[in-house]
Amino acid sequence: MLKLSYIFMTIVGISGCAMGGLVNISEPHMAKEHGSYIIDSSGIIHHSNIEISVKPETYKVGLLAAGPLIPVVPLGSGNDFNRQKTRFKIVLQFDPKGSTISFAPNNSHLLINHKFFSPISFEGPLNDIVGAREVARSIPGHSWVCQKDGDYSSSMGVALKHQITITEKSCVIIEFPMITPDTSSEFQLHLEGFKIDGKEIETIQLFFKPSTRSTYSLMG
Image (cartoon, rainbow, N blue to C red; front, side, top):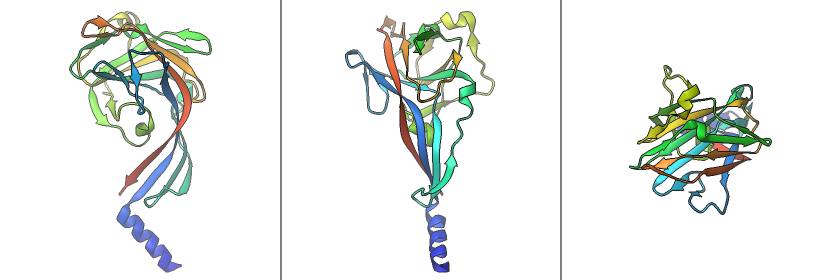
């Protein structure tokens, strides 16, 4: 018994500790007849040479586990950060790849439970880019995220009608006047009035459905 314990501790010491779990998410889909855009298997939207990710902040961490190399010891459920008690935010991530993207946040419309909602505030563009870690990696879309400056504040009112210009990898966070839905909810997001290099493109229409992804990280 002591020998087995020694072997187990040695493995942990050499390989580090692995942590994994399940994450409940809202997964994006696009109408098959939408010929101008494609959405790849990683959840990134492609139009011409630009890339866009749309990440609703609905995700909830389910069962967590840990162990050496393979997480097999249950740790219980994760923390959903009480998002279901806060206003619903959706993160738009842009990679213009040399082009210029422009849009007004108030041209984004949310459809859920047969009701339409328009944004009441937004933050961005945020361009402090870092690689996604752990839970963030399990959310469909780009493998990077935007860090938020603590001094950055939301823009509201008439500012929602102003055009935002994107020329580099950036994020814009739009907030809707409703409580964050559960990941079991289905909803749609319509992104209208987008321009690429000054030319307006057709509406991007996304459907979000509940899904579950796995997450894994090795800490040593």
